[in-house]
Length: 432
Image 1 (spheres, helix red, strand yellow):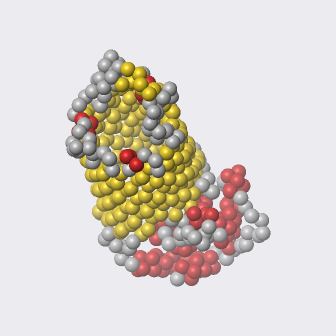
Image 2: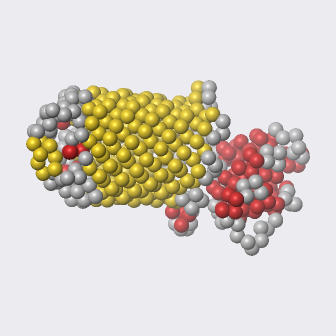
Image 3: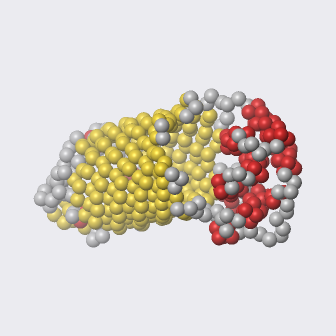
């Protein structure tokens, strides 16, 4: 049926630019960036990408042209044909509604578009619930897994002693998530997520753990505000340590200003507890209540580059104040590149941690204060872009990242540098 619809739409406009062959010349994305408003060149590029099965790039190009040339009915028809072929019914319905409002659409074209609309709506009734499974595997190599200080020394009971724990280690992790979503009215959706994660270190198995989580969230909108209240419960079972439990609720929101700017904000409340048991008799000393506030700004420079700026403040009050109560101030900046061949994000953040009381088990005359700088680079790539036959739907993603942490503190225990390299593979599967 999709092929019939595509042929029908192309024959509606036999003399259009995208009904012609683009020739043997391969059009590159660089040419598109240099000539973003060249209608003929962009249409040929969209046709070329469509023949290669790269519907995401084709749709992106046609959507941009549709914004640049809103009066061009042929672009709308071509975009509709690709959306139908790519099985994107929601966007297709949106384009159909736009076409139906046009006064310059001839009766024959309008009749065909209405037939397509009926075909899309008649395929299946919308499901009350949608179910998904998310699977991921990851590996991290860290050159300072225990945050050993630069001098390999530390304070203990007001004395300087050696900091001789291991530095290099590898961590393997795997996670499985099950998600159920359903629409609530026209502008809201509800989500339930269950997750399980297992992490194992190669050398130091004392930090091995399994964690379980439950998340309930609602996405809705009030006026121009998009709001997402949520509730999260989690339990972590450590191999050689006390189990921990956490309860968190909060709300996040954002709103757009024009086409390029969006602002976000959020608040969260957390309650974390650790078991007091024979293997860890001091775990419950870090039981804490936390409050966190965030604000952010995202800016789209062009379809290739965007930026993100974030500010944060959090306050943690623990059962035992000494060395556990602190306030954190965060500033972060990210630069994102949506290349056709990969998504790359580069970030840098600074965190200031101010503790409220001295930890007498370390030093009795100094209250800890830290400044931490974290730099990271992340790359995400679809396996289907490399081996189409292995991942035709482009639903398997490879994630590569590098992170460098530099911590400066007024207590030498927390003066350290850490570099980490990670590799992850993830896949999302629709279950119904």
